[in-house]
Length: 255
Image 1 (cartoon, one colour):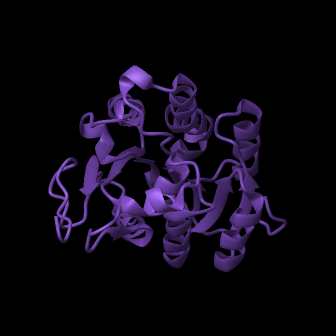
Image 2 (cartoon, rainbow, N blue to C red):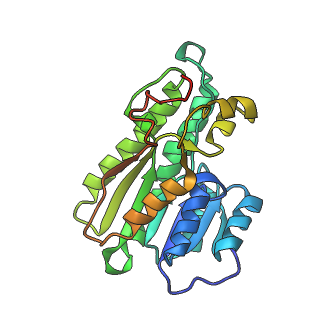
Image 3 (tube, rainbow, N blue to C red):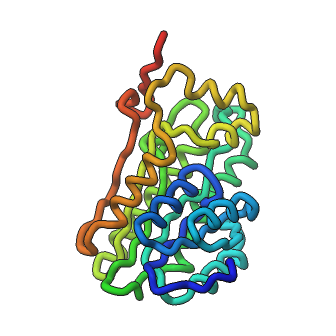
């Protein structure tokens, strides 16, 4: 973490904060008065975000126990908000041609990574002043059901949703809110990562879609639920562009 000491402001941890929804969320929370600990693997991009918002850098690989333990140690006992955003999709192969290494990596990032970070930080969240501890899982409309080529990613996001549902039941008598934010189509580097840097293929995902969501749209929703009174829990918030009324249905101009 950066040398700047933690202040008395409420503390938020955002994983995957080096780009996309994570970076936008770090900015949004900082603007709401949170002291943000930005966690991700890419230190250079992470530092850009943290320096911009006056936050803290914590290089963290959510798939590594020691790395997450270091995050928990850096956070200390005072934490109000955890945003589990780290994750992503790899590939778009049909089940009959599945790259199981990619499936394994997706499970490690999206499911075990979120579980590992949550487990490590729950004690600090439960100790939040005024019972304001809150954990946010950023899943996807992919959790709603399968689509061609999406079995691996749909499966891991459904598993992450199950984690949020179970945890909400397990902690119902404790001062902790558990929220699931469910983005639809968002223009980030998500598709670029999925297609291993193939810019043309990544751009084709958004071709002809007017009003596709931006990372800041999701960040504003996370900021909204974070700012609600401690007795109010948004179990699940589904956020889509207007032209995507369902996961499988998107209006494209000229289509």
